[in-house]
Image 1 (tube, rainbow, N blue to C red):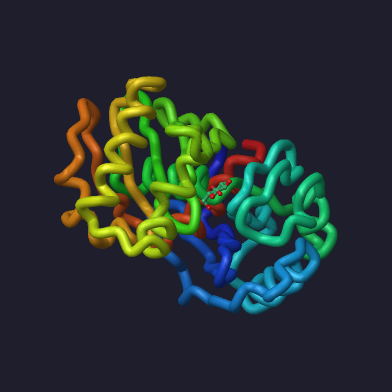
Image 2: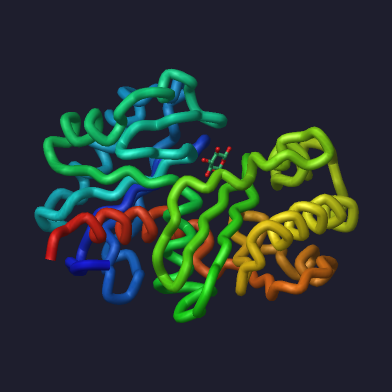
Length: 255
Ligand code: BGC
């Protein structure tokens, strides 16, 4: 991180809600109560940008001239959304960073939602100060991943989509798959076991951090996993996307 402004607006665009709050980057805490607005039914870039503009407007007096950070459930390569699994497909190929910057009238920085969550856990949460390679995984509608080596993010890893037994892993091992197929924690953990073993085999990380809403019930499934790598629950829960988006935006501020 090159420079840290104290208050940076973080926004998290999810499948059901768009949430935002000014984040104090010295503590990782929200400086004001978070605002949540339902994600538009047709969640196109323009429709989501209108909602983000409303949130930014509400907090306009609570953050300075720094860029706004926005987390998105998709890979973002130099501002362009390259693939979209869980929002409207019209995001694909769009330079959404430019679109948001124009709509909001100020610089915005887009970041993948799992990358944001990983940054938040490394700076303020379960992986704080942890040396070596940390792999953050978010178990939700999909599986998001972030690879962070000694505090430096390797963005857009998309390891939720690795193929296991002929299937896209997230379609079998996400929290959504668990709910959809009414799997018990025991049965679901067998799928997670395969998934994390595979990640271990490819990356040999120093730590796995498990986020997503289901990580609140971590005691029901993490103890069932047999891995060589320590695996711990995330601690920022639904704050992670917003906090991580703010970290990513602050990273863009030249020192
Ligand atoms: C997307 C990722 C995202 C993850 C969690 C996956 O389907 O491809 O970009 O991080 O879901 O939202």
